[in-house]
Length: 207
Image (cartoon, rainbow, N blue to C red):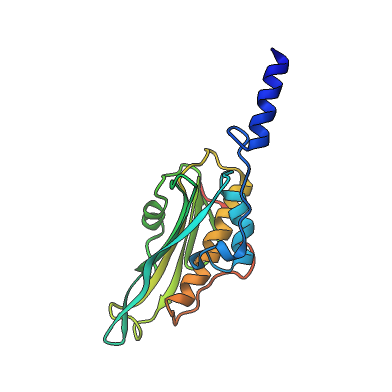
């Protein structure tokens, strides 16, 4: 019986079948632009994505939208899917209040909810929780925005995650949110400084 079990395990492993699924290697060319520079995004994606034999990336949204020379809207994102089409991870970026109330904003962007959050220095506000991270970035001045000063709300969200999340996972989610925020700030043609760090953000305890 042990020999049969061992052979079965060996076959499952060799063919990359559950629970021994082989992890696909993601190349820089596969990473869609909203995740930011591939050299920054790839290490974070390798950490946060669950093991799957195949990944696909798809961009969503239309980017910046203007009326009469002033920007009035922005929406952009990227989905990472497995071979069966299920979403593993997605990002979002859209216009929001320039300087939102801290707790109201955290309650809004942490869509999974979280009893254990950490903040980090990036943009106007930045927070990471279980399976999610978000950054609010200054973007448009009154001169450039039709509706007054606007910020960009950028978030990355895992569909499946464990509670509590490991320190490495949280750090990678924060890194990926900052990378996505750098891209959105450029793509939305912002005229205000982003206040985003050039290196990995340092997480601090919030709750």
